[in-house]
Length: 504
Image (cartoon, rainbow, N blue to C red; front, side):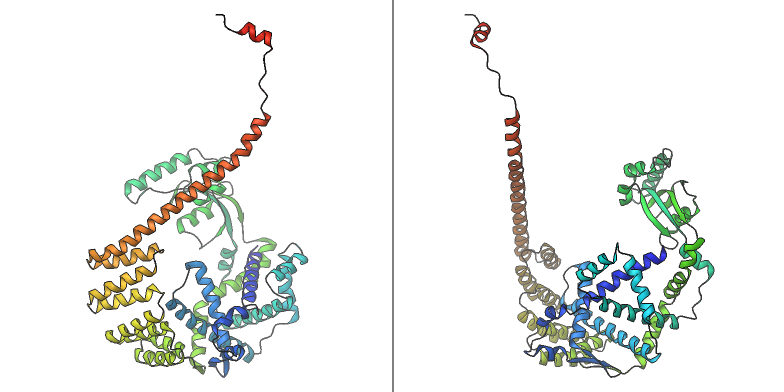
């Protein structure tokens, strides 16, 4: 089971990584390069590691991957965040080259048989080989591309094994890593943080415990549990040691299959726990998983050593960075603001129309304590990047620091006018103005907030009206159908009608 989980993760990582590195991103990256000779510009060297070149295109692809991953978590990124990601991308490329150079130095290889075995494990995860090939096609990959990725990963794994060969892993650790229990729970959360709230939660937990049996556990979880797992009868799946809160872990691993715990208190509330299955460290599956478990544990324990090894490799390597912005960012991170000013000025000579470089130069001046120069650069940045309210906001903060409140408020109001549809930005700017006790000036932003709210209310009303109309349109055919199916009224015969008529 452990091997299967690891392989499933492996295929996700490999296919996503290979897809990201595929040639399909070339078209997406063209807009990055301003010159007419795009291939030549993309091939420009931004850094060298022991003589091996990192190109502008290499940097772009890695930066793009990092940005996509972060945007999935946080939404749109600011230019300052992109500047940091570009440097992180450079560091990742440097580390990758150092690892590959060490693999070559140690003459680490991956045999065809090893690659075949890894590939077969991945194929086995699919319903059929045909399904596997279809998934490769959907990801824009060829089998040869995947084989190259597998070959490289095998070499990297072997290098890590060599670096961490001395890290001890005990039999007890291996057994604990394999052991797992499948649990269900009913969670009773306190309504507040007071002692009374916790006491009330405990009482409710004991009331539920008095009713619970193995047969009705799922039903009571759906009824009483305050956890999202309630919809699945409290099922949490398999858990293993070290991956949950200690109180829950201790109780869960002490239970036999079918046994139900008394209420157990944790930071989340009171848990009533039952175990539906156990996987003990014994038998054929455990023995087959032993080597993988030992390797995984060694890697987990050796992460600090890997980091230290990489740092040592960086220090001993000849790393030359040619791009001025990357050198400037490195200097900023080290607090070398004079160097940062020097490199950002050089970067501006290469990209005079890029206002964001002005803002970064402003940050460097601010680090030097030169507030006047910082304001000058942010003013230029806001002029060049006229649609980015964040530059005006930062400029306002600089004016505040310079105790020029009138100009600070002016920047905040200008910024608000750029984002009439961004309620969060408007509120931030409104609070910035009111914090300065400029109540009259704040009314301009307050008006924008009110207009936004009115627009949202109108949209909601339109949506409600459209949904109501759609509902009526859906009901009309049903009503017509009901009328058509209804029995026709029975007409009385004339004689019967006469008999039933009231007498005068």
